[in-house]
Image (cartoon, rainbow, N blue to C red):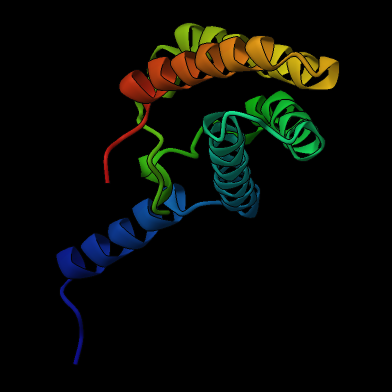
Length: 153
């Protein structure tokens, strides 16, 4: 049975469009790395919050957590290459606005890096009040970005 010419063209067009939008290995790896990093950052942030809520945080537990957050935050900008949003076909909470208003997103990433470094410095100093203030600042920075650039599940 011969396919009609128009059906063959439509099939070819669909295959070509799928190939154009299929995530490349680099995009797939970036999405996986960013999701893993954010999961680790969230876990570390929660642990620091729990320590602060205890009233007497164990700074020996907090220090490596704060250092991990700062280290991971510094790496995050490379995990948002073009094509790693919803158009990748991979489940992600990254909104297309990240690339539409990239200057605002990059600024918020810089704010996060700065706030994460301040959290790390406060933890390293052992200053509990400073740690609490730095935690609040970082949390606010995270919220600002999430409100604008992260999709709800």
